[in-house]
Length: 170
Length: 83
Image (cartoon, rainbow over all chains, first blue to last red):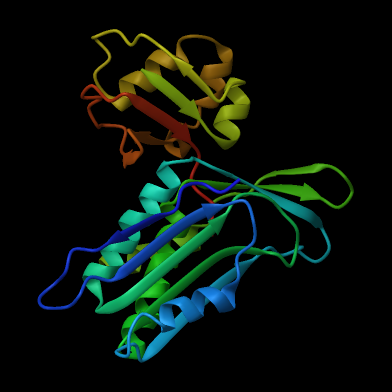
């Protein structure tokens, strides 16, 4: 099942064209190469494309899967808000965020962020910012499934993630 | 008002959503948590770690001091662990 795709445009700052923002929350896997290509093709003024892919770890053989619960509607809305913030802070031409939900096995993709801009600094920073805020503000929760068949319980939020997000507001 | 629960809050309460008539005297998010906690032990247990409870009104993050202001939907959940 795929939730509705929302493609929104950030408010243009000065004379820049608005950034092309795409947010998708989906059960199925995504194609990282295709998403990078899509943002690379948005115009001849794109000089840098940065991507981050978050994968499911097996925690040294302990986990058989992660179950990702999410708040439908708010997940799309919140990531859209963070993406528009990023587009207002850096001169990016495009920003794509895709987050999966449901049961995800070790080695599989969980999240993808792609940022495109004229120069690399804006793309690196926008991608970093989006990931930091996504981890602490997007309504997703991970539950562990253990290899021995049991449930490992809910993953605790990490203080380091909160600090990483806080550094952008200093 | 429509209430929604996620992750371990949902598991402790034993349901993922419900509709409730909130009395007029319950004006803030914190007061709503107190009111729900007084219902029974499942709610009291779910909301016992008060600082760990995050809240959204109409799908936007708010703090516990926020007024309900006629919100249609309130959601309660632990700190987020996506990404």
